[in-house]
Length: 241
Image (cartoon, rainbow, N blue to C red; front, side, top):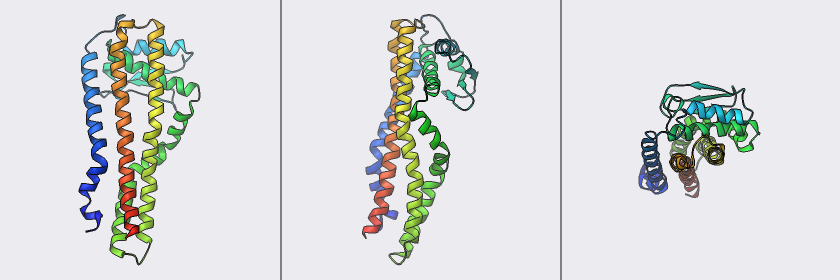
């Protein structure tokens, strides 16, 4: 039978490694965050205070810091030049709070210096918002039409190809997120370890939190790429028949 209806095993073959990596990454993040969100940093600074010191030290006094709701909803908005921190990071004085706040400031530094991967990722956002939602739907609809029409028309194939291209933007976005996030983490670690804001004995816990978070971006990229390859296999496999 055509794999559109019987490809569950094939889908698992493509996606299972990525899913397992994702579960492992989430478990590591949860474990590291739960542990180091309970340990205070040596100077008892809140995440907001760490972020402010790092921003000021890098001539980013115009960047504002705001508290937003949600757990680990922290992010930097390059459009408004605002650093938004979740309550546990904004108010918390833990090792996890210091590391997460510094990581987000790392994105502000990227914005300040015109870091190309960040600019490219930001430019992809509108396309990704469309592709991540409509891409799979358009792809499956086109694949179904192609199955119904057999080899008599290329209309379904062309529709599926459009869906595949739209979803490909999601995979590219996930891949571009890797250098952006890893670079922000590197900037955070470098500054924290040399600024005196935290003591050297704090860095082990901070590194554990940031490294675990970085692994989630690796897992997301692998999952997006594996799904894209699965879609491409279905579509090209249909053409070979």
